[in-house]
Length: 318
Ligand SMILES: CC1=C(CCC(=O)O)c2cc3nc(cc4[nH]c(cc5[nH]c(cc1n2)c(C)c5CCC(=O)O)c(CCC(=O)O)c4C)C(CCC(=O)O)=C3C
Ligand SMILES: [Fe+2]
Image (cartoon, rainbow, N blue to C red; front, side, top):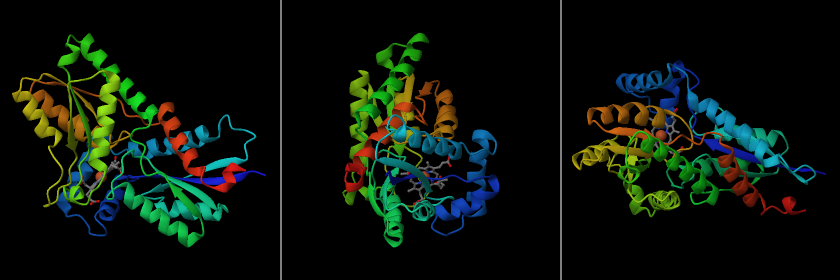
């Protein structure tokens, strides 16, 4: 008999249409509706990236599908079958909907994983908390993957992407060592540091490992996409960093947003439009590494850590 293990694949979520942006933004703001100015600003950013299409939705769908295939392919005859369920933080299907779907299918054991490699109590921590609460109420035993920021295959695929773009810089006439590699991630409020949160250290560890593997010495870490609130957010922001680099006569910049795994607003707008506009203003050549999306190497990372987490259930050892 095959045992089914549910895999709750969690991601940030994105609206389904421009009409859905208000409800989405209100959810992110914990039930407080944005002002008309804030709403317009966010809608404008979505419209700027792809004219009202929301790439994160398709990317997440594909990632969930590809993970399901990666978990089961080549494992025919095994006693365990993995069934993936999607659970989004700020859009439908919500994290709770995913757990409910597992329960409806009679799943008794599940593994939860977030499509973000680094742990923060304010990011991955809140996904896990919500999934745990719903799973307990639904009678499902769940194990969670908290982070996978130093998985060797993750470091490998990211370093290959950095090297590929450095090749392009060289082909365009730049000296490889002159290209400043900027590793970046979503900023969070500064107070996470006094809470002993591992987020920053994990991001620095990923950056250092990727730089080492790609043979890059000219690099630094910088934040991006900070929230627009009155409390201080982790900095320096990438735009500030670019100004500093320009003053130091740096002409070539490669951004590697290692905190993200998909093409979405923070990559397609904050980097490809906003940072790119500043680069041309500063007469700087800026490139970024391609997002992982559903790259088989990333799916292999995810399936490896999911299988390891599932190993703690007796069912998967029988
Ligand atoms: C750590 C982190 C990640 C990475 C880890 C993870 O993936 O979880 C992430 C990813 C994402 N954030 C996204 C979108 C937004 N985040 C916002 C606001 C906020 N993000 C925060 C944190 C993070 N966010 C925080 C602390 C806020 C302030 C409000 C609050 O305290 O919660 C806002 C409001 C407006 C604004 O501030 O820009 C939007 C629209 C999208 C989807 C893009 C798309 O749809 O293409 C993605 C993948
Ligand atoms: Fe966000």
